[in-house]
Amino acid sequence: MILSCHQISKAFGDVSILENGSFHIEDREKAAIVGINGAGKSTLLKIITGELPADHGTVSLAKDKTLGYLAQHQELASGQTIYDTLLEVKKEVIELEIRMRDLEQAMNQAEGEELTRLMDTYANVSHQFEQKDGYAWKSEITGVLKGLGFSEEDFQKQLATLSGGQKTRVYLGRLLLSKPDIILLDEPTNHLDMASIAWLETYLLNYPGSVLIVAHDRYFLDRVVTKIIEIDQGRLSVFSGNYTDYAGKRAMLREAQMKEYLNQQAEIRHQEEVIRKLRSFNREKSIRRAESREKLLSKMERVDKPTEAAQAMHIRLEPQIMSGNDVLTVRNLKKSFGPHLLFSDVSFEIKRGERVAVIGSNGAGKTTLLKIINGLLEADRGDIRLGTRVKIGYYDQEQQVLHMEKTLFDELQDAYPQMDNTQVRSVLAAFLFTGEEVFKRIGDLSGGERGRVSLAKLMLSESNLLILDEPTNHLDIVSKEILEDALNNYTGTVLYVSHDRYFINRTATRILDLTGQTFVNYIGNYDYYLEKREALTAVYAKSLEDTALSAREGETTSTRTDWQAQKEEKARERKRLNELKKTEEEIATLEARNAEIDDLAASPEICTNMSELLKLTKEKEELEARLSLLYERWEELAI
Image 1 (spheres, rainbow, N blue to C red):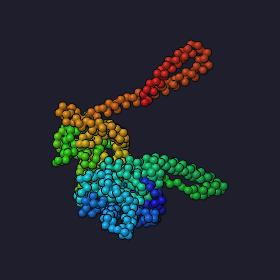
Image 2: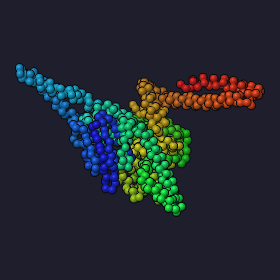
Image 3: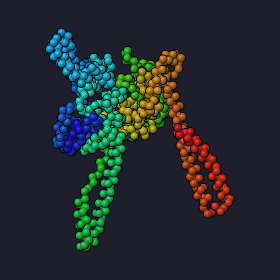
Image 4: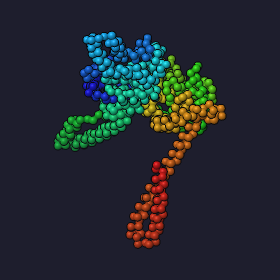
């Protein structure tokens, strides 16, 4: 065991955050802390690191073990480059290497005892150097930086010029290179693109130490962790397995707890009714029996009512009018900023009812594409056409559609003046803004709170084409699941950018992968994308050789060709599954009738009636012949 937390309690004023929580982390174990926003996840990490004191309880780190911590917000010295910042971690190794080179020079000029002494020292220093994997320190730094999404051109950038997200990635790289015995990570995937998240997953899975993570990325948790520590209304519960295992066990546990609670409540009501009835008899013996039952009832250990799923948003998205079947058509779109080309000759179509996810690395141009479609940016070239009766609702991760100087109440009422005060308050309450909170300024809200206001406006818009830019950023897991359900039940069309692979997997019917300055289409969810990515990337790479020729000849882009091929493949698969289902249903019906004929033929009424018996025999022969054909067809379809 490397880390133990025993009976940890923490309160801020009258609000209890943690109550007598205990858990431990074993050597090399990968664990996650989960809970709704505000549950106390980051507080627990800060108590473990000593940044915050616990009100009660102890945190024990095994002797001679080191701990590294990545907080959500980092402050780094700005006078260094990215590479130099990571180089600091290897300072001891570099000094050993310098010492080795000095000793080598000294040995070239030494003789006798002096040479022997130097050789002994060199052997000792080189052993230390090898133990610290000294020969790989340069490739380690390069590998970590590239894995976290930095190109070699970025290595010499000054920290002062970086965004907050880039600084967090630098700090994460420095932490990983320092190789503490246990790493504590608070939302490490927030500023990483999909490629970097996948790299981090592999890195952590192979990490020789222990890892404790706070994250809302369910796909990430499924791949990395084997233990879940849940914080729910101050109580800590430990579950073995990944996030999916935890979710299933938690649902079963809640169901069992609720059943136990309801059963006990029914027994209590029954006993109270018996006691009341006994007392109503008003006889000494009856009253004594009533008192005896009351004593037993008072000693009963009461089962607490299980906490309901944490208070969450209530989202219901519904278009006011239905659009035409052709919702959005993009032809030959190109966009660059100065010499930097984002994408060119991009063409695709979106049909009514599709939920299309746009994925790609950071800086590839995903948000730019959404802004061009929404009319907030102009394309360098190309054509964008909306279908008939299409009304756009836009969710902007930068919250530029909100007015920072307005209150929450005014933001909604000014946008929808037909709503009265009660209606505005009701909508805000559905997004967890109650009481005096509705009069907060938008500019004073956190990123997550602004996101909830944007979702509230989106819900009221009654649009039939939702364009969403990172809609799950700052949402806790419960809120993400509610948004997923709302989108899956939405009868309009959705186009969104997201790095949340679990969210994409649950909601997308098609994926547009922005790679190599154009799009590759995948008609399916994220699991389908992973399955087909290698094959389609190979097809795409080959098609690049003919791009210029295709453009001159006016051919459609490779993107449209891939999309059409996948569409036909999907259609064939749907047809196969439909026919398989119908075949199975007919087999079940005929088998049931076959059994019914056998029962009838054995009945006294039929077995002595030659006419009816012949009729049933003929029907059975026809059924057997039909079933024989159906069995063969089922075998062909069930490939």
